[in-house]
Length: 117
Image (cartoon, rainbow, N blue to C red):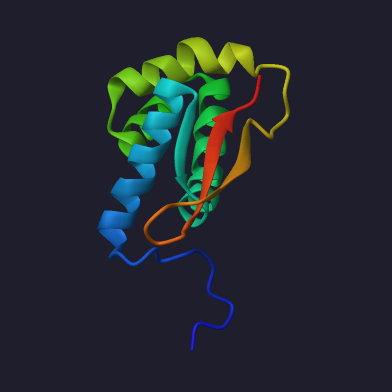
């Protein structure tokens, strides 16, 4: 039984899940808004918020932690140079999930995961 176990497995093993969520966050940073399933968005959202908080810290250790998690130097550069100053006076809540209805084919609930202005 999975009583009191946190997080969604998303039907993949842990390394795949870690890579997938990292890629979702990289896409979110690059594009500002991504279209994905509700459960993936709910799992990626805390990671995105943590990466923006790291970027707001701005030191070398934070940059290295972000690169280790996202594996994209371009995305980390965008995080630290553009997003951190944009959210400097905001204490959290950098992302928003907006439902857009079911997907054709399997009726999975689709959402937009986007950065707030």
